[in-house]
Amino acid sequence: MYGKAPMKLFSCRSSMNLAQKIADELGIGLGKSSVTDFSDGEFQPCFDESVRGDMVFIVQSTNPPAENLFELLLMIDAAKRASAYKVIAVIPYFGFARQDRKDRPRVSIGSKLAADLLGTAGVDRVITMDLHADQIQGFFNVPVDHLFGSAIFAPYIENLNLPNITISAPDMGGSKRANAYSRHLQTEMVLCYKLRKKPNVVEEMSIIGEVEGKDVVIVDDMVDTAGTLVLAAQKMVEGGARSIRAFATHPILSGNAIDRINDSPIEELVVTDSVPLRKESPKIKVLSIADIFARTIQAVNLNLSISTNFVF
Image (cartoon, rainbow, N blue to C red; front, side, top):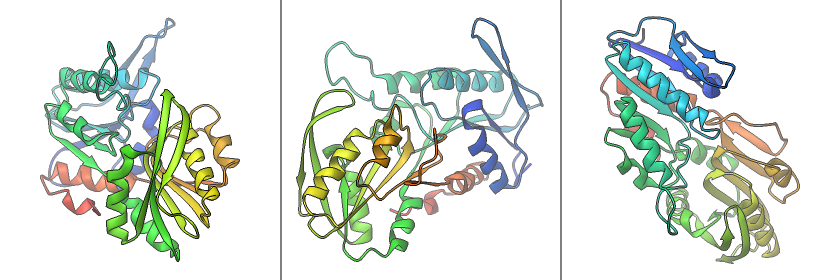
């Protein structure tokens, strides 16, 4: 037990490594749980110790496959049925977040559905990081502690001591994030305008702003296929950029994304361990978010403010 309130930390299967790091930061052991797998693909999580009257924190990113989300739902349900006092979902990467609105007719709003499912399962609070859109917090009917990767990335960028730094966003949707970095670091900012005709495929891109002779730092919430990121880097090289680095909180890196990064002019891609890295690359550096999540969990458990975890 850590601190003054009864607290236990558990993990679902896809976030086990990160959960262990968080437990180490807190100075506690990771709670005991197991999963029974049936031959048809069905599975049943189980707590292997009592959680009656405890503050139960369950760590799990909900990136695809959908089993990751469903396993978290089952764990929340199991904790509530085992008489846990409170159940807090620690979701470093909230999957299905790109489906945050009806951008064309007859489509679902997947992030709202995921929030409803978590609420129905009985979650009392959610701790997450760098949602694809800030308004997703409003999809929940429980408190949401929304952390930011900038708490880790901003000091790293400052320590690079780049002589002529310029912050960039890979698309117009990331302009708010890029502006926050730019104001904090007191640098210039450029934007990328992209025309996308279908998901994960960018048809055209143009750079808004001056990049000649600049050390460009591209910031984003996630990198999936890396198509937009690599195209932005290529356009900036054509514009005379001196160096290009990228920072993305969630390294989805699906398909041949890592190969794209390796073959691109990007010198370094810095990500977090919100989701496990599919394979290592000399260009990809992983910074752990275990410390910031541990401090937030501790603050929630002790009813303390978490605002000190924010850089900007």
